[in-house]
Amino acid sequence: MKQAVLTTFNTLLVIVLFITISQGEEADYYDWKGLKSYAAKDYSDSIIYFDMSIKQDPGYIDAWIHKADAQRSLKDYNGSIDTYKKALQIDSQSKAAWSGLIEAYAALDIYSLAAEAAQNLRQIDPTRKDYWLREGNMRQMQGDYQAALQSYQGALEIDSQYRDALYRKGISLLALGQRQEAEGIFDQVLDIDPGYRQAANAKGVTVQSQGEYEEAVELFENASQMDPSWSQPRLNQVSCLISLQRMQEAMTAYAAI
Amino acid sequence: MRFISISALAVGFCLAAVCSLWGAAAAASVSGPSPGQDAAIYMDRLGTKLSSAAEHALALECFNESIEHNSSYADAWLHRANSEKALKNYNASRQSLQRAVQADGRSAAAWSALADSFTLEKDYENASAAASTLTEIDPGNKAHWLKKASIEQMRGDFEAAGEDLDRAIGIDPKYKEAIYRKALCALSASDSHAALQLLDQAIAIDPKYKQAHAARGMALQAQGDYEGAVRAFDRALQIDAKWAPALSGKMNALLALGRDREAADILLRL
Image 1 (cartoon, helix red, strand yellow):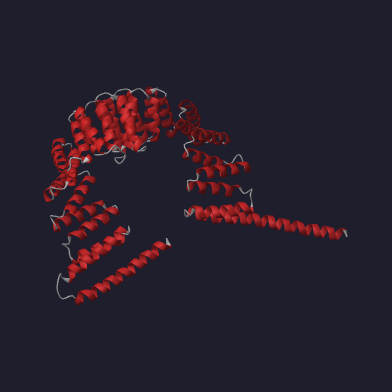
Image 2 (cartoon, each protein chain N blue to C red; image 1 turned 90 degrees about the horizontal axis):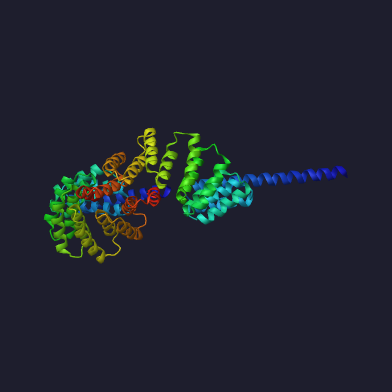
């Protein structure tokens, strides 16, 4: 009798294990199918597969994240936010889920929540300089230039030559009215990478903000030559030429933009 | 991808069928245009249809075939140039246009496209010459005068541009693009008051003409009225929130007003 009970129990255990493993494999399979559709930009189809994967295994976080990514690609940002949050309920340390959440909030221009998500991501792995940068960028978009400075400082403590963080730090300094400090930072970026066109343009803007229009005209010319198809420095140059009352040059440049 | 391949095959079959049909028709033809001319016209039309369907590479083959049948057929050269432009072969496109105007020196469409092609290459001297020919061919067309004026402005010859714009406005006194360009001429001569009057006129014709609002911003900036300039750029941005010239103009006016934070907000989003 005891032998029969044991045999039955073992058989049931094997069946349960088999079903569980099969479900896991099926979840993985549907997720893989979804990723194939996603790669082919068939986002709606991919969501059907991700949902099938989730149905097989509701704890399979990859399928939740991939579904949210697909929703984001379809510009269903609110839907993607809900889905990323479900992924985070499974694993609150998921970098991919936090990262997607930042993008979804940013797409909706909700930068306060994007910045919070970026802060969470950075706290998960504070050794990643790009996480500090991202947090800073969201703070800047939120309009909190002071807090952004602290984030950029965090990135620069990891890599003092991190040009993107330096550039953004310069923007924060400009916004906070520290024009000369900003100019110095943009110089530093251009020392690291002389082809960094945004820094060249921003340096021109900083010099212009100090009323040094002649110098700014030259700086915008340099920035424009780095990428002749980029209209931004040319437009700024036009503005400086107007301030200098060099109207014919200004209008000639403007007509050609 | 598979659909594209099938489409290409289908077009290929159509081409083959059309060519064989044409052969039969040409053999049967006994009067009218020569078979070569008819074939050239037919292939050009087929190419134009493919071009409308954005099948530029296939269209190019048709235009080439049309030119093989009749190398002095200007339309085929012009259409070939358009396909080459769509395929971003700008040099080849310009060369085709030069062949088009050689084939038919009175083709306004070819001269107009040639002027555009030179402008794209920033060769304003040749662009101006092409636009001059255009105005000679059809002096009653206001768009030709505007095109020439725009090129003259890019060359920095605002006096010549002003004369061309007067011709355009003479044809159509409510031609807002010409009035706007005339305002740029006034600004180039440091006459911001005249520029503002012209821009108000353009805005009265079309209140949503963003170019005129942005130019008002520049005129006010030239007068040192940065607050007014910000308001003018804001009006342009109400029409098109992401338009770079208005964003940039506003940023620069804000900097002049010492409103650095707002200027930085724009700089980040440019």
